[in-house]
Image (cartoon, rainbow, N blue to C red):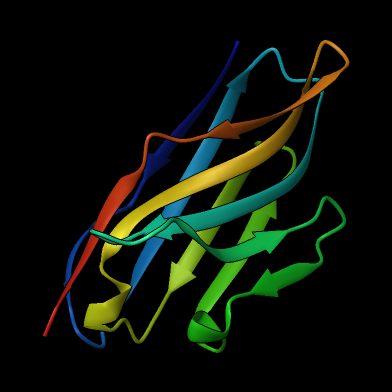
Length: 119
């Protein structure tokens, strides 16, 4: 089995910073793309940023220039550094990883971590 555990969420004032982390553990053969998604109340889950196994990154327009995604392949972790946070960034943030377990690829999710930005 594979488990993704997130950390780093919390309450921050507008303009502040937070860094989210997600670590994968279990019977992992290899990991492909990693990403962060978010879901605000009453809205659909949306992509925030992702990073390929080779390190190529992709960002949603609403976070470009403010958020930075990075990965540590040796530790099976993905981070999301968030600066200049806005109240509209308030959401539950989920990490996602494409993981090969016993030669079968699957999409795995973390449990979610709450980010609240006060105005």
